[in-house]
Image (tube, rainbow over all chains, first blue to last red):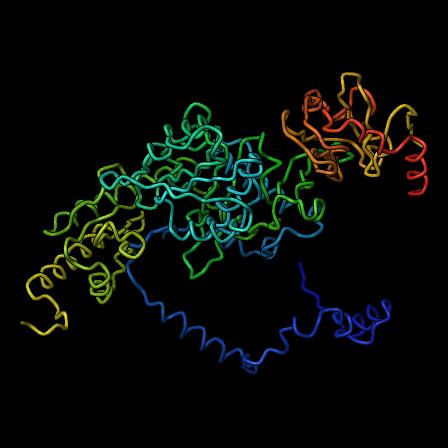
Length: 465
Length: 130
């Protein structure tokens, strides 16, 4: 799709037709105090060569580390064809085109994506994607609240990614929805189901069920889903898509299945990058299709009886439903969806299952190696997928991670910031991309750092005596 | 000019209201409204037992080209909804004043019915819309 800017002549013609002298007059109804004025901090232009130099220098600031960090986004191998094809001109636009039906190829791809996601989640419906996982969860909470008009409480376990909990809070706090934290078991790392049972029937609109949860731990999703339904609340599954190739998907949880499934689509062929772009996926039971936001592509037949693809159920969207639309987000992450669709098509269900199994295997190996070190213990008893929480005893995790980083290794996430009750807890992850040697290397460096710090504790800065 | 039965009451927002004898009022959308909206694909109905103020949005009719709110013509409690429409929303098109009714409401104050428009007044509104 070519990008053709307006010419001066076209701008002149448009202004003439509405009887305006210039562009500023077009915006004259906006009061002066509401205008931001001219941009003052934007430097003057530089050449392509200089831009290249600046960008290269900045990208090198990230460094090259062997990565054991998970926490919501994961380093996976991305087969070369995924981005070779995604960046072809035919796909290389982030938006569903405004004349969507003119782009049958794009619509077919989105339709294939929806089919794959519905299948992976065992749900009836998928939308065309949202911005990323955290806002997808917020949209799921809003959709659930719409179905329970008089009940405004939504339960979010503390085992949900802290970043997601902040984003959800930010998006729904002015919508008369009360988010309530649910505690977790300090021994298992799983959501405290009894704390949920304390809520009565018809007092909760929805329960968020993470699988695996932020600690990498597997929740008892069947019991949680059934309990949500006992309370007449919707069950919202928040899942890692890779894990769903191995574990039972949300549509099969409990007696009736989760009602809505959302999550971060980044593990499906999208590289790690600071701040994205990533993509959120969203699936639901058919009976909630009118409550979910986002575009939905349907397959149909045209006037000549030929198969074609079309945007459907648009009456939910803001260009028709205006202020009562299900969301002001009616776009999708087209380019990321293209990559995810190609990734899933290339791997197939068997390939995705092998990736998931290898991730789990590597994280087990990592845990075994690291807990073999004196002073390093497993934090939780419950089974995990491809992340695990380790206790470093009296060693502050932040200090240990900095020492490991000096050896070219990103060792994980310091949980003491968000979960001080866990003490010196480290969240660490090994996907299929980590090798036996890299895991050995991590263990060797960690052991050395811990033993050296134990023998020769760093000065606390206090004067003895 | 679409059908506007003389025995019904109407609102500016194109609902019709029929007194069904037991103190309850039956509410639907007019033939004119369903013509404007086109083929119905979905009807969202209020919950039985919910209470409405006059003018509250309490149902949604969705056609292939638009979704439109339906308002409670008077204050009261929803006593029954037309569940037939869940599987056959097109009934609103084919029989707007009969089997296409949306919900029944028990008014808090029966005299409010007299404040609603007559067929004659509603006809004038539809004609003015041209």
